[in-house]
Length: 128
Image (cartoon, rainbow, N blue to C red):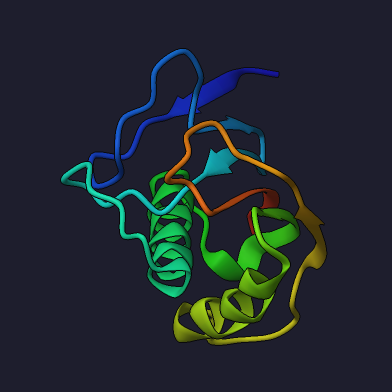
């Protein structure tokens, strides 16, 4: 089966890895952080979480999917207190159920010191 690299125009550019790969009806989304399309990132965890979900939404849309097609997400946070910021940020964009399976990991650091929250996931594009 062919693999399609997803590179949306409205999401920050990455180096060395693909933001998403689409194989058939499955979209594998790499770790996404809260960088806006200007390359800026807030020091506020809730703003990072909101921008992260906006980025994931744009990546999925570029693949022909939507947030509600996510079946699995893993979120990484650098402080356990940030956990309460994730769901409200997701609910701003997530309009329907069911929710995906989810794992939350608290870690000491992400790839850059300013990254407080990161998520990756798998989506299955609905046929409807």
